[in-house]
Image (cartoon, helix red, strand yellow):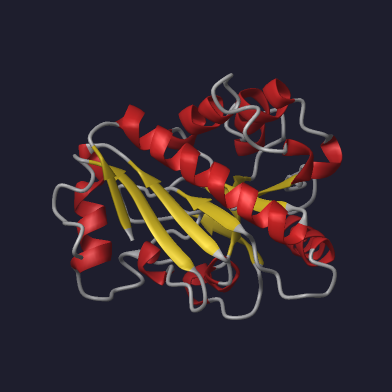
Length: 242
């Protein structure tokens, strides 16, 4: 489903409202809401909005459990850490309890960090299927999402829930959810804005299936909802009927 807003401000409000409703529904159903966050620059403003006076009292944050769809292989206090960005913009302002936050342990070697994170995810779901209530995703100009980058081996992973991958394009390791884990979610929401993303959006939603070129095409939940939240410029080459 496509949700197109006129500008980034309206887009962030639309997605924040969506998250509130998803959280309320999940908490009513199971007394918890398990969400995987995305990193990068686009979602920072979303997290700041959720922590603002307009939203902070609309969710029972004590019942929200936070994970990360991917992480850069840097220390947790590094300027490029997704964890640090979210800590500053969301966790600290809302005083989120540490036991509700599941960050990637980047003090381990990359492969061990991925294995450790998968184990912690499986433990959180207590032996049941690992299905997040909501996974937030971004989109790169090159059609990557999470750390599923073009022409990387992780795109073809069928079994692991979390994998380490060395991304030549950015010259660093990343720890990422794999497509099978993402696609198992109850709900997936992309946040995409800006004209620089329009070509990638069109390739993913309208182009031929070329997973290695357009990794975000992998995201296709078998038994869940897929939502695209975009502003007008990002959605310029698609329409709500696509």
